Length: 344
Image 1 (tube, rainbow, N blue to C red):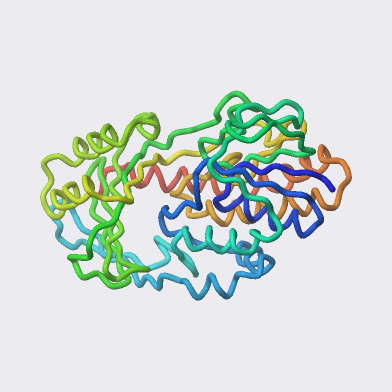
Image 2: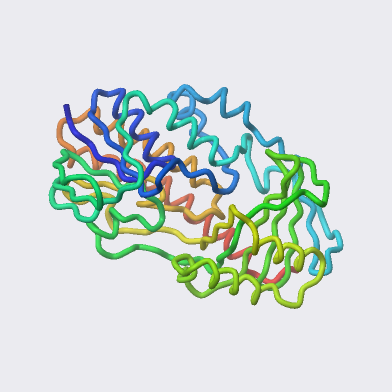
């Protein structure tokens, strides 16, 4: 059996593991986190992603988890209503909490794939892999499905390929004191934006506080520095902003990330390939990240299973998927530019 190591247990990694295991591969998934990640924003499914969900056997279950968002009210910097956005602006046919997809993907692969949590790759040399904790081992193929800050991409491809699109922000939740029900609020001023919604849990508000930045450097800084940057960006504003900043300080689900894309000249090198955000993140502003990860995983698995030569399969994978990724990345850039522009 062909031995495959996949780094990353979020979306692209487990989806790829499912299809490869079904094709007879011996698959191990290594994940830096000590357990399945239970955070992240709500995610959308579009177009051919539904066919992938069907192939995974989870389409009906995903549809049953839809947040049923009904739309978003747009506010100016004073909190006054200035417009309405229909549901499709912020979500598609189906929107679910990311943790639910991660849970389902793990559920359908747990009995056919070996998962190793709390470990990470430290070196890769032509299929020989060393880890922080596990003994070194040899694999026929190594796949990086470990996100925007991919460890595999750093070790094998050198240049990080990260392109910052001018936005960073914090996400967290707090009690739903506004009484929102399957609706969102979008507050904007020049260089700052807040999105609030109550969807999957009527008792909680999900908060995203975004602001313009020059680089994604804050992503790697301690939480205290990230919070300080958020407070500086939103200092002096009224409406609900002070209350949100207070809630941020005690939130146990705080997260911080930047709006970035990943652009590298090649998605493979030797026995190593990249899939999902690790190789071609389109940015959250594209609304296509999850769909792209699922489609990329199925495409790579199909081509590997149909060809005895991984180099030929890797080349076909990139040739087939590059136009789709380029289109999604253009959408991500355009939407990021619209969000960083001064509101009319």
